[in-house]
Length: 176
Image 1 (cartoon, rainbow, N blue to C red):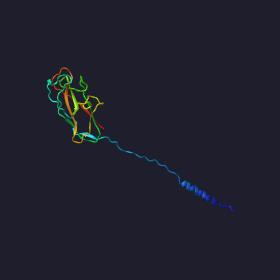
Image 2: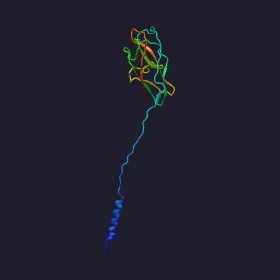
Image 3: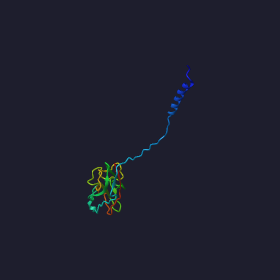
Image 4: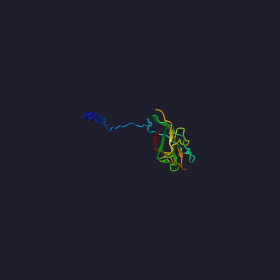
């Protein structure tokens, strides 16, 4: 007995139909990732301060390196900070005779201004004009507390001229 053509063709046709219905379809999709890497958030309540050195008699200075008394402490007041370290560098004109001091303007001569964090005067605790490699560092202060500074005049020449002894210094604050 001979198989009929329908019995032979039908299974082949069904197999071809099944294979054709399993075709793979491809489609493209795009995934966008968004986010932010944040650093320490810190700010100041005060941004400009004046350090009153006061009136100092010329006779206070007895030779190069002698100094006036320290000014009262003043603070840059923190508005809060979640950093682990606060570093400050200072820019301004350095004294021609002592590059560790800021030059004075206004008429006085033979003196420079030394700015240190409160209780400072040890290496690394005083501002060095335009030296970003030696910042003055602080532990971050909570809101309402601050970073304290004092200043004084230091004799830089053999002769001192009387007059106003002022300076303007820019402070760059880095939070890490």
